Length: 294
Image (cartoon, rainbow, N blue to C red):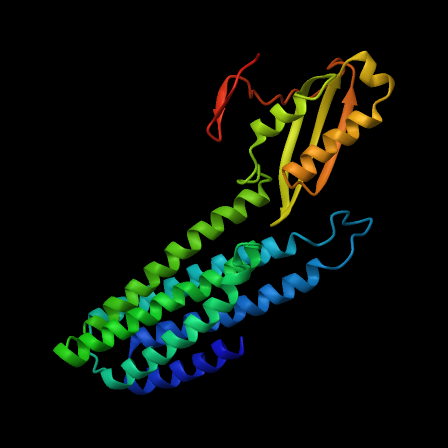
């Protein structure tokens, strides 16, 4: 945050003095970077608060909401760049390419440092990934600033400045779409992308005494915290002493598939079950394996 904030101020000054839209666009994006990291830190702190009667899963979803806000803020800054670029295409603007190039090179170094710091945790949290994508798109923006500076300095192509401003805006939009899709998937309680639900059903139904699985639901509370609920039918011998089978079912879900919150209801039949969400997982290809009814 410190690196990003200080350099953002440098870019504002450099952009105003040089008259470069690419620099000012990058400065605006750097501002959202600092905000993204601040929001990510705040969300991490809030999500660690304990669960309560009103919020039985605690505040883990705060990190997902922070990631969504980060994605939407990227759209806002891109829209502002498009508007300013369209204005500049119709005007002749003198740009100090030397200052633009110097500030762009410094920005490239700063963004590389920040991206390296955030990359180590981006794969473990959508929240941190949101901040990382902000920085990554700004890193590409710094490359665009440098390229524009070189073109203006070498060929006096002042038009390169708004063109690369638009390039930065497009990069911002592209980087935000993937993050927003992941956020929506979590909020819609979609099946975690890394979880092979068919393989999970196959493993559970493979236990001795288990006759079937229905009403199965798998979703993510937040990144790295998955939940599962399922109704499992078993034969009479199992129902007479259900605890060993229940424990084995939970162990498979948690140990083999990394599911943190497992709820399994053991039944002797599907009679009386009002939901029928059976996942058809026989005789299909899943993760490169074929499971037959036999």
